[in-house]
Length: 243
Image (spheres, rainbow, N blue to C red):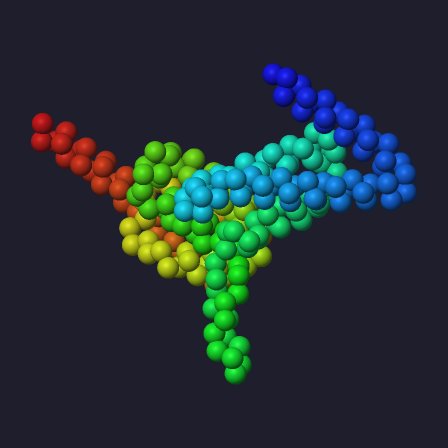
């Protein structure tokens, strides 16, 4: 309880400081810099503290990143009333956390003329996001314990983190590497949801051909869902006719 009260008082103090400094020319700039540095240092510290677990567990990795985003968003809302300047600072710092390659990294081959292959460090985030999507779209222990609406919500959360990724082509590469021969029925229902996901994917900067492939996958899921439902109804009617 004491920690909650202390956090609340801290938000009030920050809000009062923001109200005063906003009246001074360039008075906000030091606060923006401090916010960026705080988010980067606190975010990376939390990720590093859990590194042993989250680098090998896609679900925990994504949940950790989402928890950080929510935490920093609540800070900006409570202390700075979602002022666009502070939202921009939040997004800039959060992207730095997502794209950090000091611990959560892939060593990508980089061909250089006359030199051969070298490696270029890149954040492991896109790979882990692709693995997480695969867990949601296939019959896995994670997807089996979630309702279709919960899975849709989690897919939207993936796109939120993907939007912060610097190299989205890595996500596309790993996502394509996961075969989805039998879509798990009931994950994405109806034309509204397919259009909604396609729009969000476009917003995070995915190329048109990849968006179209995802749209076809969502259509396949809908068709599979309809076939399963029709089969259940037909089977139910046949049982009633035989009894």
